[in-house]
Length: 324
Image (cartoon, rainbow, N blue to C red; front, side):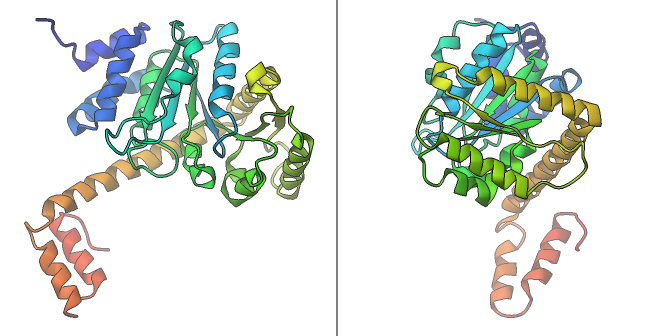
């Protein structure tokens, strides 16, 4: 009977480039068991912080997977090791990833310098999966120079990707009607780089002009502030992809020169700590249901004996915290 490797061994093997070890670590964090999450996070901590994390987002149908695949091809030609986390909608039956971008990026399947993983959102809003931050750490520790995070494609609600990415690419395409409108409504503000994909279609020049006009209206800040470039691409033919990768590299260099990367990563760590703490409190509240009077508190609120804030204070006290 074969021995199952522990987390420290898996981390060492992943750092050596073993794809199976990388896959097993990501599976551990996706399973969501608290003990495993803690052990993996502790083991990965000393080996992370090197990868350039690039978020790829935009409305459905703009060619995110095709663009990501073309970017991977160019990065590999430059000798860089690449990870891809493709966040897909969840199957309503299995809870697993529904679309499976690994199929659409099949040309890279035999390349040991590329690791591609589809992750299910499992009901998590904002275009990302709950396990995505830990999966990013796995790929970072495994030596990836660049990690692409391709989001699920839900339009303006995908702004959560900016909390994870060092550089965020917003893709739009001409002839989609509400593409630029979606940008104005929510994702315009998060873009570090814009790519107008399918730029061989009618209307591409107008889409570029619209974006540049909106960016000009919104220009604020110091002279050395980053101004998002607008790149035209036809990802299916690899046209404009070199300009896109050059824009990503330019933004990475800008982040490092001014200390912005450190600031963003500090904010990312703060947000993750807060999210974990809130989840732990939610779990504790769930454990309290019925056992220590949550139902009784609700009944007292309905009876007018106590207001919801007072009830929440009582519940907080029972959790061992301090009432606000």
